Amino acid sequence: MKAQQVPSRRSKRIRRSKRVGHSTRTGALRPVPLLTLSLAAASLAGACTSHAAAESAPRAAAATDKAASAAAACVDRTFGAMTSAQRVGQLFMGAVTPSGPDEQKIRLMRRYHVGSVFLAGRSSAGTKATKALVDGLQAKADTVGGHRVPLLVSTDQEGGRVQVLSGLGFSTMPSALVQGGWSASYLRSQATMWAGQLRAAGVNLNLAPVADVVPASLGRSNAPIGAYDREFGHTAATVTPHSNAFAAGMARSKVLATLKHFPGLGNVRGNTDTTANVVDSVTTSTSAGLGPFRSGIRAGAPFVMVSSATYSRIDPRHQAVFSAKVIQGLLRTNLGFKGVVVSDDIGQAVAVKAVPPADRAVNFLSAGGDLVLTVEPNLIPTMAKAVQLRMTENPAFRTQVNQSVHRVLAAKQQEGLLSCG
Image 1 (cartoon, helix red, strand yellow):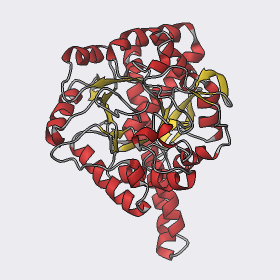
Image 2: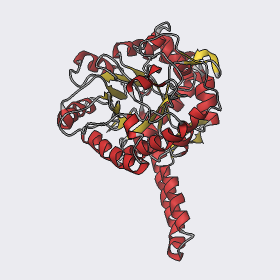
Image 3: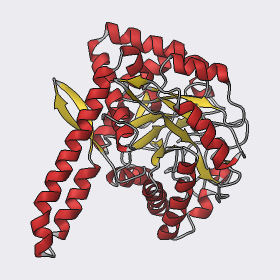
Image 4: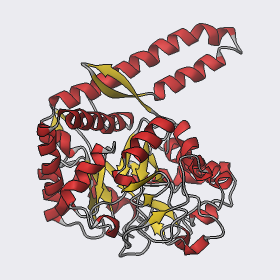
């Protein structure tokens, strides 16, 4: 949700110009990576300027089509070789504290085949020590069909008061509000460097950038974002190019980025990490504040994080993280997002405390979400069992879950984490 703003708090989480699309196979939707299609489009554009390019364009298109088919086949093969429990495990991201890993919780996540981890809290150990920790976690990842299925390893590396990883090898990142004063090209170059540092530490997913727009009139009275200078600026016109630049920099160094916190936390006062009943009574499905999300999705955002606030002018009956109107309607249908939808923390956040843990996971997935983030891994057994039970009882839910697993595996494949030999 918010961020790991102080040692006792957490936070959450576009990046690269890769996009996940859908194709049909055996009657079910299946995500396939579309980065290769964008590369083909670039080749075709160049064909307009040179005869040589015109001759090479068909070969490039054929090559990218072949690569896309191979990638989709690898995702299908991995999915097909998984047990039901392994598939459900891909839908969860549990927290690990890099400054003091809890081995019991790590074993529990391994037992439930958890496919993603979130480095939470604060660590000043540097890139080398962090990489050693991540390598140890990756060594415990599931093996499917003779091939290991590596973990998505995420953290909150925004800048300012929300920078989880520091120490030797990590730059000190200024706040997003400072970054928003830079040119987009300079921010992109800096983000490329920061992402390279994350890669060196074994991190392949950043739960950033913050695409929320905090009006100047609200400023630091906005507890989740403005109070910590986490916004790039106070208008969509400022936030959009900087959010895109940050994400593009992540992509350049092969780190997946995440637009957060959809549909925006800029107009609230309470922090959903620490406050119940946070309501946005301003944002609508056509608000200017959606601009950074819309632009980032068009640029190929691979991940979007959904907030736990309630948006009374979009869906007054459900928190966004449990709302089909927000996820299926606004995010997927209206904005056309095809990638992975990750929840804000639904483990410890006060905003969801009134909802039983089992229902949190089932309701998020039912609403169209893909990846459940919980900073409390001890809740995963309850959540995973509830998901498996609902799958046996409800074929439509089972189909929806299988689509989510495909999306997560497709993101891993795009990141070079899947190998099919």
